[in-house]
Structures are given as C-alpha cells and as structure tokens.
Length: 226
Length: 252
Image (cartoon, rainbow over all chains, first blue to last red; front, side, top):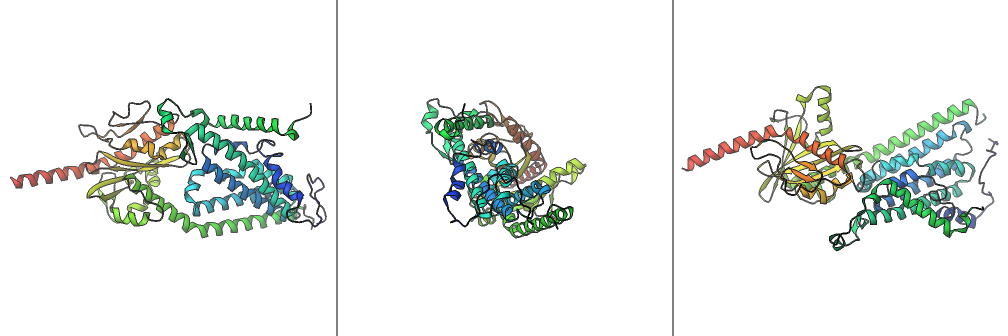
C-alpha cells in the first residue's frame, strides 16, 4: 500500500505537532472568512437558499452540516489509504449518506420538533457540495485530525452565512427572530408590511450576493489582481 | 494485493456496503421506538390542540386519556365498526389510498369524541396534499356537528413562511366558528379563499397570501375527508332529534 495519491492538493506536513498548532487553527478559522465555502468558494448555495427563511432551522441545519462534514472527513481520512482510487467518489458519497441518515434519525428520535421543521433539508445535506468538496480536496490527502478540524471549520463557515442570511430574511420577511416578534404590532397598524419577496428563495441569493460584495470590499486578500 | 486492483475494489465496496448497512440498521432498530413514540405523542398533541387543549410532549399521553372519551371507527355508510383496528391506529393515508385501487367502499374513518367542560366535541382527522407533499390535520366540531371549534394542521414540506403558515395558530384561529353545513343542512365544507371576504363568510377562511396551492389543498382536504362523516352525523342527529321530540312529548 505504498502508492499514495500523488496529486495531493493541500497536504499538511506530517511532523508531530500540537493539536491546535497555528496550522490547524488556520484550518478552523480560514473557512469562516478567507475561504468561506459559500461566499468565496460558492458551494452549498442550494440549501442556503432553502433553509434560511427562519433562524431556528438555519441554526440546526448549520449544526447538522458541521457534524456531517467533521465526521465524514474523519472517517474518509482514516480509510484514505485503502480506498480504491476508481470508486473513491462513491465511497465518499456512501460515507456522507450514512452520516446524514444517522443525524436525521437522531434528530427524529430526540429533537423531534426541530427535525419536523427541517424536514427534507437534512437529507439534502448529502447533496451539499461542501461536504464532498472537502472530502475530495482535503480528507483524501491529510491525516484524520487536520481533516476533522477542516470539516468543523467548513461546516461553521457554511453555518455562519446561513445564520446571517436567515436573520435578514426572518426579520424583513416575518418581522420575527427565532419566532419572537421584533417589529412591533404598532408598526403594522401604521402601514408597515412584511416583505413577502424576502421569503422567496431568489431573495436569499440576492442577500448572499450582498454578503459576498461586502466581504470582498473589506477583505483585501479576496480582491483579485487586475 | 494492490488497492486499485479489481479484486480490491470489489472487496472494499462489498465490505463498505455491509458495514454501512449494519450500522444504519442498528441505528434504525435502536432509535425506532423513540421515533414511534414521538409520532404517537405528536398525533395526540395535534388531536388535543384541535379542541384548544395545549399539551406538551410530556403530558400529552395523560391529557389524551383524560379528554378523549371515545374512539369510533366508521365505514363509508357512516355505520360504526367494532373490532378491527383501533381508531387511533388507523392510517388515514392508507384508507384514502384505497380509492385508487377501487376499494373506496372498504375505507374506514376514525372519529374521536372529546369531553371537555361538559361539552362534547367530535374530532375528525383530515388528510390531503399541498404544494410539495402531504398535508394533514384534525378538525374539531362542536356538539351540533356543524360549527368548527378548532383545527390543527400539519405538513411535510410546505414552503416556510408561505404554505407552512397553515401550521401556525394565526391561520388556524380563523377556522373557529365556521360552519360545514349550510342553512338547509347540506354539506358545503369550509374553504380557504383568497381576498379578505373570509371573516364574514361562514364557510370561508382567508388564504395565506403567496400560498395558493397549499390553500387550495386545505380546501380540498376538508371537502374530501369531511364528506365521509356526513352520513354518520346525519344519523346521530336524527336520532337525537327523535329522542328530543319523544322526550318533549312525554313531558306534555
């Protein structure tokens, strides 16, 4: 089994290093900003549009994605040296699918109310490009611990955007946050209306676009050379 | 054995499939009872909330046995059926699907009788389809078997903020006091109508704006499911009115 995959994209040096070495910390923090899966890599957009109408499902969805990316990265990284190269995508998919089903079953058994709200979207984590993207780009070529951290980092990077978008959409679309009324009744009596457009999926895309714009104009690393 | 050889590939995929299958089966078996219990409790909560009894997952079972005094199974002619499945365990989806295979006269309809504050309520489960998937619920009628006392709806995957609003109290409150029969006693059901005529119309409820298909689904669901109970209600009503006339005659 000496044939390592030679095209390792982001290999982390395998010298003994502390669990939270600067390198590993960067794996955790980078996806939150510089390499955010949604705003920089533009992955996982589909589910970001679907679940961000309200804040609570967004938070649970974010946690579910963190768990799935972290543990599937860990598992894939552990078995990376025995996965036959030709079927590696199928193997990744099978592991991700198994993790997602487990998460879904747990939610159904122990936090039934939340699981009802998320309905199909938990199952759709399987199709979330971020999960498979990290497996293929990172976990296949790195040791378990960095892969695990990388999974958590990317899950969080996804979750942060989800929560920001859902705050904007729930506030403008329903006048509530976490189900509590924020915009007072008196505003409605004076002629204020919830914006129905914000509830529709296209508006999530526009909100994500605005976030990308703001982020790019503030973060110098993301500004491309002319 | 090289890890990319055909043999290794087959071996790896077989082992992987078996391991994952075992893992998921174990999870399903271990978690199954918890999930089944959640579903039962949810059903009890929904039944109770249609008559305005709020319960949590902790006390739903207790309140259910306290308030729900009767569970009746009806056939398509509106006659009570004894023996067979208990009303609570009847899967309305299966019953309504019987029409597809031409067995509509074998359909069974559960009816729950609730006693609350010395009043009788009849709770009817309903089921239909919304925009993305099934919608369902319970509708509670008052003693006259005409006035709606309350409803509780649920859905599988309606759009949050639009169709999913049928699950909220704001929408369900509007059904209170509506009538399912017209003045002559004919069945007209309650419809979800666009525009703001609903508050004055005894058979109409304001629709959620932007959720046309879900709203139509609710109307159709009520129309279709409630119609099955009308024969039973008519029979009970004639019996009670006969009883009343007899009683009054005796008094004179």
